[in-house]
Length: 497
Ligand code: NAP
Ligand code: MG
Image (cartoon, rainbow, N blue to C red; front, side, top):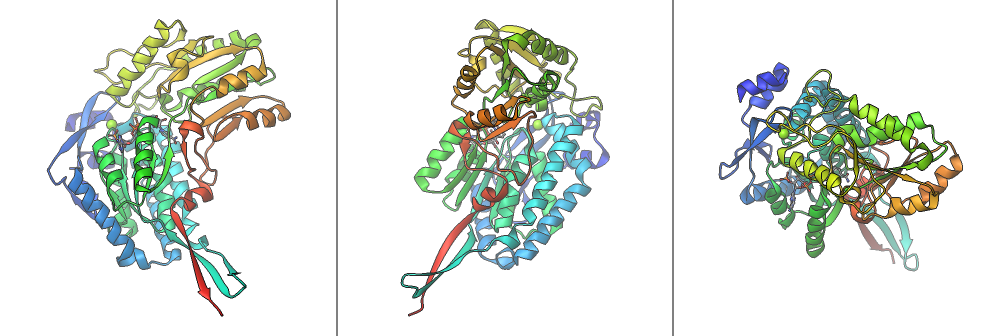
């Protein structure tokens, strides 16, 4: 394993972290799983094992939830002033900034994404997230009024919802966690974080920074493990709120369990997002933007623009432009200095995406670029794959693939294309390209999505709410809705008569 780490091209700091014995972080301490179980961590760029992580079982889940409960009601976190909570969060942001290179390398190794994007997108956004939410603790105030015949005084308290289970996927490993950690800490909650089994490393390194920043024991616990770990966490009666990002199938299961137990829940789920080029669009910008809308992060983005609709009169030009860009891209290891596109995250994902590509060919779509990935023993690489199809009912045009596969289709009529864009169970994001401001406003209002991009794709901000409609989820992350999702509103009434 040591040889494969050295060969991956990591700096000394990152390599020495990856080589450590990785344990669970519970109550401010590192410990192995109670039953000693571990699981392998792979480098998707080489298909080799680079580390092992501890596999948390039910008794570890119980210990972490109990530690989070104690930290919530006893000890320094329970009595810490809002202003000092901000100080601790800002320290975390500063430490992450100081160690940004190492974190970017860890993400590039573990997920396979290009180092340059790991740093400029994932880690930079984590820092922004912490700094933005560090401003919130001191602004969480309630309201006051008279009630009854003006003989009662009403006031409200905003209190932390309690112990939060944060369950996240592997596509932006630390960032998907930070979208939840930052508002949860701002609200005064305590946390049990469950990273994806494919990408556990950055969360473990982040727990080390939490100790350095002075986050009290039990406030942030990290349990590495698989779906069974996540499921045990969801079921634990000591958890008050679940924040989940992942697949719609698992989201439905978690939502159903949360409903039965009446736990608070927010769900950020899948998408099959439509991207519409209007006849008057700046085609050069639309082609470049539509390309990165799908292929950025090797198509493994919940907000990927995976269905492209192009005016029939521009179809050949747009397809030629996309195809040229696809042919010019060679997926490379995340830590390779020239990498702009990495492998997919796992062997399982490699097989899944390949099955989808095969189904597209079988069901009659025209393969314009890319195709089935080969040689899975030397990294799970799949080229940017472009299909052309006039049939919206084929599998690749309907199901979320979560890989570098775009299905493009021509259209003639605007109302018709809006109906086609909305004919999906998902509603995470949608995009359109036009020079006409009136069309932009009118169509943005009609698209069934939590976010609409006009003349660009994938802008995020910690203050800009993000989340889905329909089967893409419940609730919003970022901004004031995110903080509210980690707070309970308590009304106090005092008799004045
Ligand atoms: P996933 O299989 O749903 O896993 C997400 C997380 O849930 C992982 O930590 C996973 O553990 C855990 N998990 C699995 N089964 C569970 C269960 N029964 N109970 C509790 N937790 C469980 O999703 P994924 O394959 O990792 O990620 C891809 C999906 O995430 C895509 O569908 C994508 O659209 C969605 N996504 C959505 C957003 C958004 O903001 N809307 C952002 C990113 C990704 P394991 O690691 O063991 O599987
Ligand atoms: Mg990995």
